[in-house]
Amino acid sequence: MAVSSLGVGSGLDLNSLLTSLMQAEQQPLLALQTKEASYQARISALGSLKGALSSLQTAAQGFIPATGQTALNKYASFSATLADTTIASASASTGAVAGVYSLEVSALASTHRLTSPDSTNLAGTAALTAGLAAGGTLKIELGALTGTSPALAFAADTARELNVTVAAGATLENVRDAINTAATDGRVSATIVNGTNGKQLVLSSAKTGTENVMKLSGIGGLDFDPSGAGSGTLSQATANGGQAASNAAFKLNGIAATSSTNTVSGVLDGVTLTLSKTNVGTPTNLTVTKDSTTSLTAAVNSFVKAYNDGAKSMKDLGYYDAGTKRAGALQGDSTLRGAQSQVRSLLQTTAGGSSAYQTLSNIGISLQTDGTLKLDTTKLNAAIAADYAGVTSLVSTVGTRFKEGLEGLVGTSGNITAATDSANRLIKDLGKRQTALLDRLNQVEARYRKQFSALDTLIASMNKTSSYLSQQLANLPGAASS
Image 1 (tube, rainbow, N blue to C red):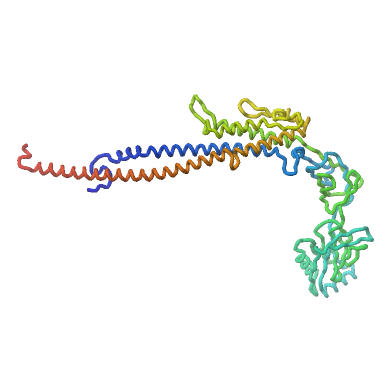
Image 2 (cartoon, rainbow, N blue to C red):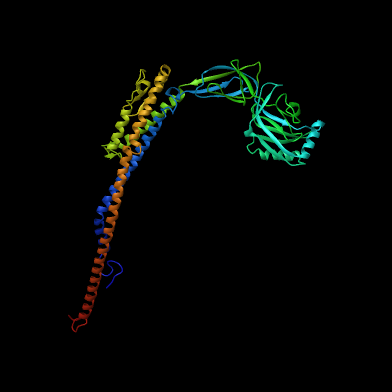
């Protein structure tokens, strides 16, 4: 007799019995799961340890000069200010020399600008009208102008030459559009100004200075030759809306200098000037200052904080409270003990050389009883003032040793990485064992169910037979009286 649920036929609590049996069978599986959870907790703890030490490594790396940089100039920062900020602005970088300099600007760099004749220039207007009617190829050359007027010499740069097709009967608007279309890199630009005396084409070079002068030829009325005293129908005269190209001219401490742009670098070591106004006869002071303390102090503070964060993390991971019997995730772990020992030994790094500042304690960084560091800023500043080179050499050496030493812990082949990989391998193996055990448990449960189902069916059948016999016996003659 088949039954749909265990115990239905027999009336026995076979489901509870099966549950108890399976709980006993599952004990090995639970042990494997507990072990896996412990490995997962260890991996998480190792990750926390690695993160803290990686942050310390990064902070230590901040002590190390970049390629091509010395420990002496790594922390030096410079600033430059002008007494009269309307004359120029300035910035300073590595290589600058602190001091006060006199700046006198006599000329600003300007772009070259040419204008076509207006209605008051009858000859020019006639030439332009005839040139536009005929059309042709407008040749625009860019180049350098040397010498002094009226003996100026123009040297064209063939790489920047433009040849613009002007259709017969073109308007000034057509010429403008053709030039702007041809000059895709913006080396020159064209626009039209519609003034009191009619429309004028305005051509401008993109860059300032006498190395960016324009020469035009090929179309009557649109010609200009900058050599000599300058000639052509187009005009660079200020009165006509034009502008001659010029270089910036200035004096630093009375020494004359020029620049093709108003942004000047390379004249004064490490200093960049942006000129904005002339001040002939009224020089202004340029002050360059050097700060060797702020950046170095910030780097030291960053290192101390990262070290203390790492020390706290290692302490929390390895603690044990005898009173509460509670322990950190890596209490007694050899990887943690090795990391703590390594970090403490790195603190003993010495600079070498002849400086009196050989260890971190010499510059105000002391180890406390709780394993953290404490910075005495007054002592650090005194050390910087007394021997800046010695202090920067020390922290550079410490940074290098910490970076290399911690790499053996947090690097791709470091101890923490190896311990994490080992735990992951064990978890993988436990996963395989759990899968195999689950398969066996499923088979065991299926066997128990089959046996209990057969038992349920048998007892149900026996109960039915018993009921039938009792009924038959009850129907026998004399059964009622007896």
